[in-house]
Length: 273
Image (cartoon, rainbow, N blue to C red):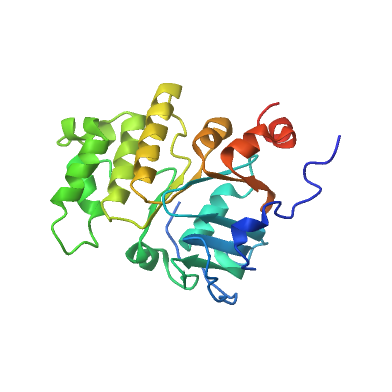
């Protein structure tokens, strides 16, 4: 049997389009590159780096997503999936590569500045204000807004009807799936250009997972790109326009979700056969 880790180079060169906890800002010591004419809307290109003075966790890792797409990052435990997401959001010290949003390098910006630029990020844990009501959580999501955000709140309630029903209830009293809806809704209140989700279905039942995936598909249909790290790899790839399999911080496989599901090596090594 061939070694699934032997070739860590990206097998789908099209993704580069010719381009080579606590929210703490990472440092960037790489060199931003020029935008290609056909560059993806969001791309973390050839990212190399780690946390602080520690060793590199990502090694020449590239992930990208276009408008209206769902891109999913999967892989074994410790593969660097959430680390890659945090690198795109500015929480990792990048020593090489670049992060570009809509043709502009944002690699030197703090996470807070990236939110202003249009990034919505939902971490896996500690992603709601438990002592605030559902509606207060959503209002907090609109902290960068200067306009009337009531219309956006109604859109969130349309997407997650249970939140409207429980809007006066403290978010900490909700079920795990409902809390995740609050977290996603709060990120949507910023009117993001791209939405990033770190394991949104962790710890929820299969029924709730399917419901969350349905809502994620609805968001993508509005044109917002979705970049998602997901532990339920098979189910996530079923809804993915694009998938990335990471191994030890490197691209091992990439392609459409259906292509990866049909790849015998991916199925054998990462999806249980």
